[in-house]
Amino acid sequence: MCADHSCIQGDATITTDFNQQVIDEYRATRGRLSGPFANARLLLLTTTGARTGLRRTTPLGYLNDEGGRILVIASAGGSTRHPAWYRNLVADPRVTVESGPFTFTATAEVLEGEERDRVFARAVEADAGWGSYQEQAGRTLPVVALHPVEGGPTGDPAAGDFLVAVHDAFRRELELVRDEVASTGTAALGAQLRINCMAVCQGLHHHHTQEDEGVFPAVAAARPDLAPVVERLRAEHVRVAELLAALRERLSDGDPDTAAVLADVDRLTADLLAHLDYEERELVPLLNAGIGEPAPEAGEREPSRPRPDVERVRATDRERDAVRALMTGGALSGAALPGSARIEPLSADTGGVPCDWVDADGAGLDAGVVLYAHGGGFEFEHPAAERVMAHRLSLAAGRPAVRVGYRLAPAHPFPAAVEDVAAVYRSLVAQGVPPGRIVLAGESAGATLVLSALLLLKEAGDPLPAGAVSVSPVTDFAAEGGSRVRNEGRDLVPAGLMAHIGPGYLNGAPADEAPQSPLYGDLSGLPPLLLVAGEDELLLDDAVRFAEAAAEQGTRVALDLYEGMPHVPHMPVLGEEPRLKTAETFLDRLAAWVRGLEDGRGGQDGQGG
Image (tube, rainbow, N blue to C red):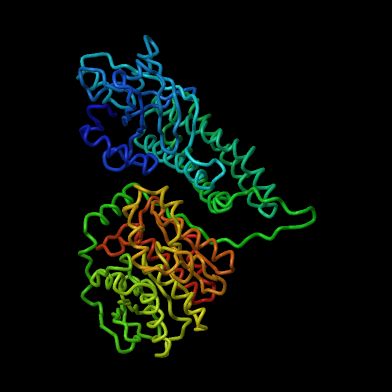
């Protein structure tokens, strides 16, 4: 519940100075706020100033209502005066509403008489704070109905990113409804909760109808080879519709059993989340690439283009907040090795490149090696933290790790660092380590160097390693748009950083050529790859585009996308026990992927977690 003078949720009061931070986070995360608003239903309301004519945006709590209306209450946090946004919309009822990925124009109507009292009573039933505000204010709090006029999710309706944004809105609403039902205990469901549940039902029915009548026929016409995928998605729509009907019937009971409603919601949630994940895995790359290509001639069957094995790693708001806190609070700088860790500086046997030998369990060379290239924008290194990362990788992969202290830009620009990584790899092979037991791994700048080194080694005719792990790489120094614009403000990396990193590292080398920009290389014949990226990072498209290009050229690629995570989403593995669930997920999936390399399945074990 927010107003222009204060935002109050429970017993936490946040002044106007914080409102802009709330607005910025809301827009950056499509409505997934952190802190005291993590479980709140909030929207952004933009009105036109009654006196100034200037547009003004305010975060507000809201209620769902029958018929698609949205209800807001002019509480002003219990102030004796109506809030500015209310006075503005009385003067000009045409407003703009942002709700998650949805942005639309609405007409504001101030409710009167019995209707206002009925809606307000329902609001108080859902949250007693409204009643406290009215008592504190000593005035009748106005209730406003917002009638949507036009608009919807922002973005291209034919794009896969648009589909993900809509799906995420449903995921968020299901989380809220599930928590609301669970919190009612054994009490009968309140009127507002019934409406919230029904809003989910209506929204999902409308969305699936649009897909059945629009997206799916377009996919089937453009790609007949995807008929089994479309058939499965249609069948899952029928199943979800059955679950929605069962929930509606349960809610139509005058006094439904809360535990039964919760069971219905849990069944719906499980089936729907699985459906959304499958649909995104199959259709998002296709929609992002465009589905306007003509269908093959009658009697011909267009072969399905190879695609990366994409997995979206789920994360809770708490996990996302914890990752951001770790990355911004300096906690990772205190990463420490366990006392049993064995660290040995090397240089003589690594092509003259300074390295650290990190063996987590004393496996020795017979087990193979993880060659680790650290991040740092090609210009910095943090040896203490990097040794901890090498130790974590060694433990997960079941083999020693070699941290490569490659030369740094701008004093040593491209190709110095790539040549150093290749030199260390060649030195390991020369010492008798079978290439098939070496795994390259790196994050950020190091992730780029790993991919660049693969191309360099391939071009030179060297035997290639068993596989490579690349977390948040730069694969295209020439790129400027896409996620680098779309995720600006979401990522923890400043948007202008690439303007500095690229020229400093390349030092005049072309930005649109390989191996410095791996995307432009010949990606056929590479060993299996595990690419990892955060969905909120600027470099998301670098990972996705490279994964798709490599897969199309015949390389087996696993692509893990961490929901709502910033650049280098695996970094919390450096933290002390107990680690975040997402950190453990990264280590578990890495271990499974390496096992897949060992038994000849090309990292297949890393899929489906």
